[in-house]
Image 1 (cartoon, rainbow, N blue to C red):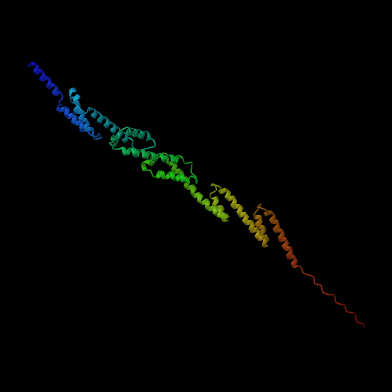
Image 2: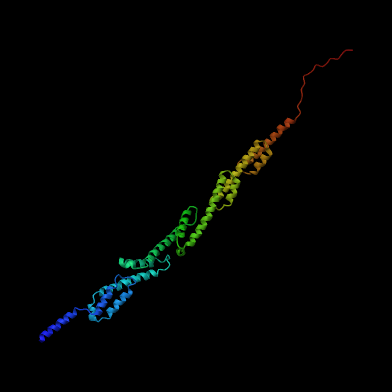
Length: 308
């Protein structure tokens, strides 16, 4: 009888050891309720952890899913860490890349399911895009080698990139004042180039006086000084031709004055003498025309004297 009692007691203990208490079951139910881990899972995780910690060591050893709970806690912490890292990025500047890279690495270390739970991951993508846009403008400005008519397209391209930025991004372009300065310088050069080309057209049409005035206003631009000299030579050449026309027309006094005004241009000195010579020759010819001419009549026979 005593042996039978012992066997019955042993069987009861073994049977009870396979049973779970309500507390153990509650902990397991709490773990199962966590489901897919997200940033909203913290209350469920904390609840399961609390129930597990409230168990005795013996009951805790009977709980199925403790590894699941630990994994849920680790997953939540990683998701939260990435979310917080992205939140600290703030306004993007040229100095934001290390923080952006760090956040990107943290996000890449998550599983695809965890990444899907990082609710501000789009903000990280936007931060990367913003940084690349700011950097592109910065580099475009740095590549500009001063302002000239030749690199006007590069200045305009950099300006277009800058104008496509948001207000905050524009403020992050630390060399933007250089762009403003170069654009202003280019605009001034472009205006001078327009004036220069108009002056060249005047010169090519033979309007040397007007062209000289136009180039004089651009004396420090390009080869304007050379064109001024060419205009002056053109004016002298035109005056020389006009003086020759006066000479050929017999206007010797006016022609002589015109050649004297030309100074050392071409053979103007010799042409002054030519004018003097021709005027003198013309005077001699005129003098000859005014002299009285002798008249010669045929000899008539002399009448003989009559006698008595």
